[in-house]
Image (tube, rainbow, N blue to C red; front, side):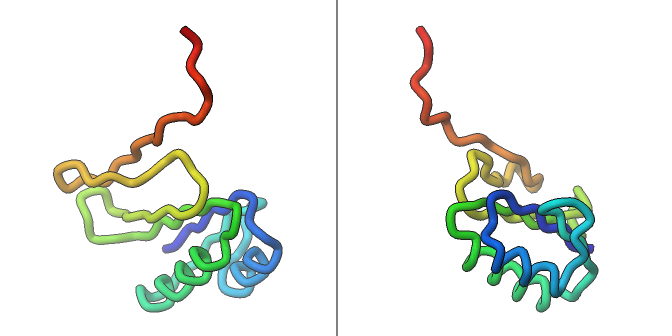
Length: 98
């Protein structure tokens, strides 16, 4: 199982994703493909995301049962923590109130 969530993606990329996956909600695509096809889809996403951001989640033989990758302008980034993949946040660009 593959799930791709895009935000602020260009129409060309959304159309390409819709050719391979089912868009169950706006910007949320689902399908079931091999690892090779999943990598091809991810290369299309990461190469065409432009100013948007995306995350892909897929079933994997890990302790969590899934794995994920992110690309684009997003504050969240995946971090490996002793074999578990967690999400860390980049600091906000906004000035902090004191």
